[in-house]
Image 1 (cartoon, rainbow, N blue to C red):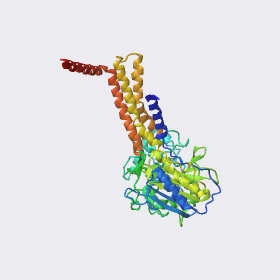
Image 2: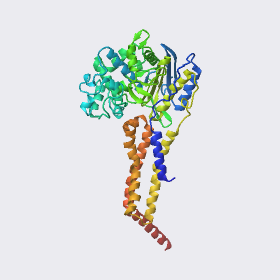
Image 3: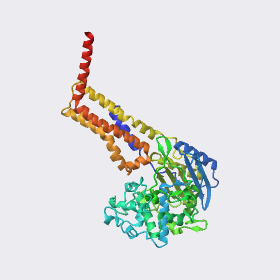
Image 4: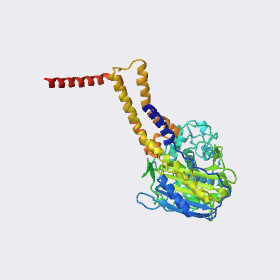
Length: 523
């Protein structure tokens, strides 16, 4: 295969295999006859440890509940570079599983008569608007909850690197939507956007009269006895938070990421696996944990009801994805930030809840980190593990990224050799049709990786290049390297092809020098 064909083929593989963030969990067929009798703890331990090794996960915490009881609780691996062990009380950043807390807060205020689900957002935030004030005035609270407001996915990722910790951080972030164009009319169809839930967080703050963080503490964490949970890093309850990691090719590397307060309602609540089991118990038991009820049975049912259609088999509810039919319903959500990952799974027909918290994140490993919760569910069902729940180590995406470092070098070497050959034949400068094939087309190929990297990839993943750098620094390094090489060689091609006289002058000088040396030697 020619260098040009190899370049195009591997670049395509990188885009569509190496960089695609596969964030949907692997699902097994529901089993209505759930044989939950005795937990095989040894099998779960062996499985979790094997998955941690396969995915290079530093630390993981697992919790399982049935009915109103915690039936399994354990930490695995390390919580940080100091080697301290993960325990059931170790706090982790939750990522997008935070959204279900925000939805719960909204529903509490609905039941308190302070929020109407079908009222426009402007009833609570009078200044709220997007680039089209008329269209954004049609967005309701329910639209935000069901992720069908029309706010685009990429708008919800703009604040990932923001480190504003002021009391106005949340409002400042929502006011930036004034420059965002809706992708569709409100209520038309599902499109996941973090800003839906950040806006809901500000509505919680406005309707309750206290900060979002304080509301979550007082109305949810405290009654559920979530003693190692917080809504901000400064909360003493989360002082022992795990260190987050992100992947660098094959290896997890500790990474102290920024904590964007403007995105707390959509992705930055903090909790331990023990606390999350209290939360799952309330979700499975009509809003009740112990003697405390945080929401009515009807309110819980509303949260778990299918809302906007995601696919023929799934819908987005209110902070949850709902799948299946009555008798075999799955309610789940996962979460990713740059250096943490989480999964929640409810099997309401079997009264089972599972939570997995992981202290590593990254685009390329999102799907891999989703797998453990599915395997645990299969073990609880009494089923054997399959290739989907216990796949072998896959290093192909990382290998492809490493290979991509060398593709521009091969292309540059081949191109330079071609230019030198044309020069030696006296075919430079180029004229007529030869200029099209030997200059303009190769120049387009030189700059093609730059277009793909800086235009197509951000559009494909609904994320800025800044977000890609934060979530996948290894991929960004490859992109930056290819960009530098591509642009540098494109400039060099222009110089060498259109100004061959400089090369010819150099060649003549070299031949002249060689002639005089030879002549002097003869004398």
